[in-house]
Image 1: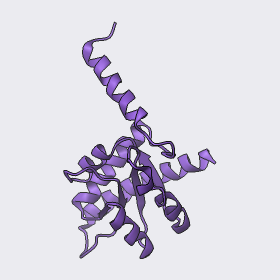
Image 2 (image 1 turned 60 degrees about the vertical axis):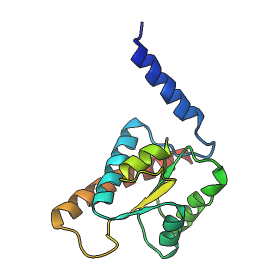
Image 3 (image 1 turned 180 degrees about the horizontal axis):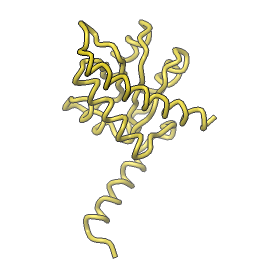
Image 4 (image 1 turned 120 degrees about the vertical axis):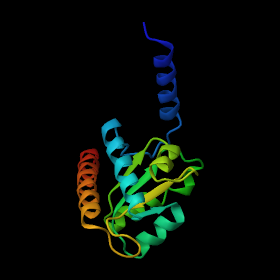
Amino acid sequence: MGSDSETERSGKDKKKINSLMPIAKPLAGKKLCKRTFKLVRRAAEAKCLRRGVKEVVKSIRRGNKGLCVIAGNISPIDVITHLPILCEESGIPYIYVPTKEDLANAGATKRPTCCVLVSTKPAKGELEEEVKEKLQSDYEQVASEVVALTSSMY
């Protein structure tokens, strides 16, 4: 029989899944979610991250490329329904993660964040070679998994 902490954890997981919106596909699994949050954290440290719907849309329209990470528990859903279409038109891979709070923690902000755009180029200046290599390798790994997951859906 499970302990109280196990039942609490499974209850929290069920709440996360129940609060997901129906369009949250492709949804990242546990491993991919962990790697995605690690990538978002690295990008935030390197200042290669765009946070929020307005900033992400503006960046995509200007032609910036990257990986779009969208939270799966946004309410109302209309706030982000245009993002997947915009990403597909621009050829940008996108993935949903379970909660906006986890996405904000990974992005180094206190406010819950609907979406972020991870790019490999900083907004200003240049990155150190070591930081650039780590960010690029993490980005390529996650982006390839996201593309594979998306292509297996359709």
